[in-house]
Length: 289
Length: 325
Image 1 (cartoon, rainbow over the protein chains, first blue to last red):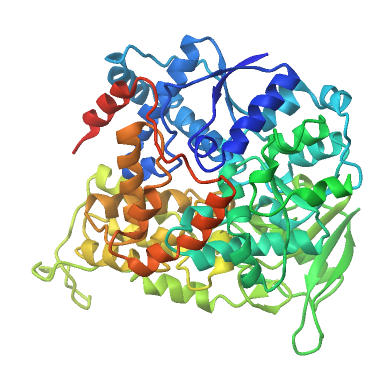
Image 2 (cartoon, rainbow over the protein chains, first blue to last red):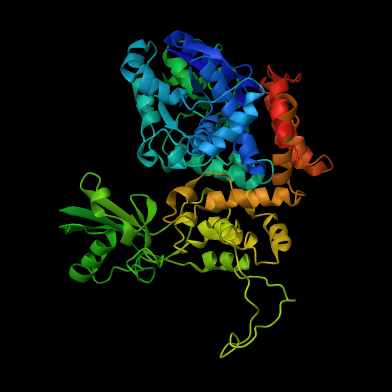
């Protein structure tokens, strides 16, 4: 099993523990990764607001690079996943657009042929690797650990750009948590927005959005949250001291990246998974399991 | 036999909301609205809900079906049965008046706030007879090309059912946010070739609680029963604002700073972008970054000080050059 690995900007920036934990978990699972060091940012739904064709062109270039390697793409960022799928659907659904974009890419020696599949680690674990196989590799079951999944908008909505057949009813994250021996927490906030996209201009409301879901998870007795999107992680973890003030309670909820949770159950050392890099201490997770 | 678990509340009698179960044999081809009618007519006349056209045109009958808003008249019951049950609740982000009926005053106020009417060119001549006949005045005909109409076609299909606002995550956190329906309505007028208030509208919509307070959560897109798809309309508004140079706000600065960053190095410079978004002269704004900045630095979560560009950056720069306006 080999993928063209697209880490995304945040895993190379503020959430480098996502990058390192993804590499170590992939290695442990026997998933071979070829990092796309020449691929640009996906645009995060921001560049497309300035110019949709520019955004699609940059993504088409990434797709073309993966196609040249004859590999499908593996994302570890939910936002990258949603944005890339949207770009691919825009391009594949409009032959004229694809021709225009290929005209732009041609000078750089790239051509996008519509063959590459774009997958998130979340989907790869379930569809390609398989949860039974994953379960067999668990050496440190998350027994007794109540884990609240936090999906992040971009892997869910709009549903036409989602890999889930029924995003409103998906239990993908819950299934992974269960396979690792943990107990998934059921709460409405799992499908909600963390508020990150407006953190730079409407901090109060952005963090209120985070607070609504975190408070609900806490009330449902979650020990920690896990998310497949590092942007969600940034809001929920880095700003948790501010969120505590908004919800008027000490949340003390560690926010893990998906590969970190998998890594814990696979018995990988917490430091190697970068668990010490979170703002909210993750130590209590080990007290529980 | 299917159990309809329906949200009930009569503020004049009940201490709080509760759910009441109704068992019903589902007639073939029945919609959720057909079943609500059957329950009301044959089991419990006190159940309240809104309905009118029964043809997915009037937008009255939006209710939450198994957790998300849908038009009751457009939803087949058989598609919604989960373990022999269907849960029916009032739409969200609105005060419940009784059972499934909610107060839509705030929703309508926001629609009004975006001036949902054409701002006309006052230099246009009054109509010549026979157009004037029996009318109260008006102006000469202003024709639109199919391409011009295409820009407002999607937003024109909105039926004001408030499903988008029901699940809007930004509205849930901030009641003052204009919300998806009003912003979609605004796009319908901003992009109307006959409207003369485009600049004024975009300036208004760029203020706090306007177009930049949408988080792209996609709920409005998902819940919209028409082709309006408010998220797409909000993105269109933002593109228009950037094209018109209305960039004196953090949202627009964020987009421009983001694009600039990718043009420079192919990958986002997370150290620089917050400063560009907040604005270099916005001292209180910049100071507000310090606590989280220090916190992240102490944990080694700060983005690398030396920001490296991706391989083959020349090719990315070449693509950007093609788009330089």
